[in-house]
Length: 203
Image (tube, rainbow, N blue to C red):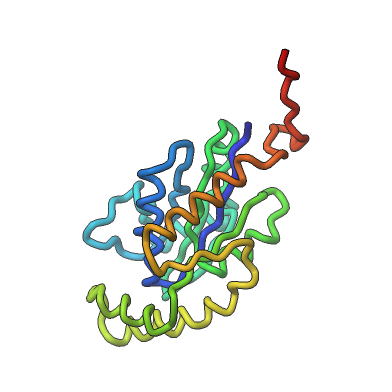
């Protein structure tokens, strides 16, 4: 069977990275599509694992070459998803998770060559989102306020997604996300040619 693409978006500070980390530790046959970005790596991030960290000039060259399924500028930095990386994984039956923002998700919805399920991870409230952003203590006040404002704007896109996962309790959010992926795997139309899989009659 071919793999499937799951596009996951969430406001900064929602806990998406933690949820996805738990998901990857508990499920097999699912991988991240590692995005390209021009932002600087955080202290615990590794090139080629968390992101492909590239220069602005390198990123713009990849745009010109048509390497990205989607790309967007977020918080003053560029982010992009390589279409060739996705195709290689789903062709061998691996489910691929795209961790991208709402701008990128909007672009992907118009890409006819990519079939995907869209999942939005939200905080239980905007107050909880602000508390989590402040708790990270990784940014100055101006940057934190910018991310909070962007988070409010991103929440307006929630109805554009197929599924909504509220990260109130981490374990429940992980179970919900796993259930969505398992449900897609059980879908009747997971054959290579898109036709329903017919099981041989038991004898």
